Image 1: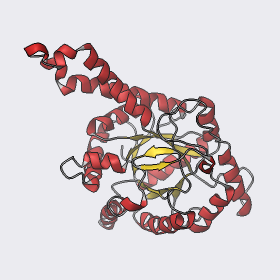
Image 2 (image 1 turned 135 degrees about the horizontal axis):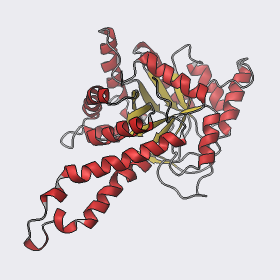
Image 3 (image 1 turned 90 degrees about the vertical axis):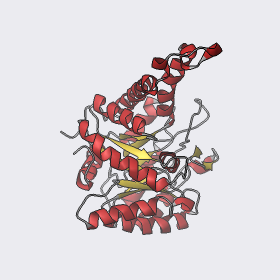
Length: 343
């Protein structure tokens, strides 16, 4: 059962929260990056999450028509087959989907899983993300309510982003400023709209200074301790015991985070951390090294014939997979998921 059933995915998230660890959520854009993610999880003996953004799905759909749903469905079906060969459990997730792409991405994918569930099968994806951070909170939560109801019926978990994450992700961008911090009032309004699980389970991407992409130390001020304030504020309002963690948090924009920042986030209820920028570099860096070292083999320089063994995509592709897999193993260590796979 390498692709988690809805029941097992819930168990995975419960185990992470109780054990104060998180699953790396690795963005993939090809069969090769999928294998790199799966290999990394297997080598770390960690379960994990594989996710496809709208841009990734468009790329997977092919440059002839760039159909996001076709790309996402194709890779998900592929994953259901190849993941059987890896001794870990993974969940399939779709990353950042803004309002203008819901009808071309998340809603059609929900429909696919709805039909599968009606036929007695499991959903194709285990979770989907609605990114309403560019909308007003009222509009954001109204759409989230609609999506959560459909997701629940299809045995899918919804991820919501209620306030902005800085930087740029697949065309959605936000400035790096004081708006990058979710307030207790934002969290309370989220619960008023989406409940505490009785309306369907959801993951919450709250903002604590997160920024997508690459940034140097000092450019961004992360405050992962803010997550504790959000949990405490909601627990107090809804009469939950002291120390309760009502939310299952997602850590976005984690590239460049310190070990201390990650540890604080884990202590305060983060169960999923998105990793894309770092794994992109880890995949590409060995390829660049290979090309520079073998330029006269990969290119037909000065009328020569080159060297087929060096420009064969399998040659440099294996290096890319190994590089990305190693970065996934590193992420599992940082997030304490290494060695935590469901037996």
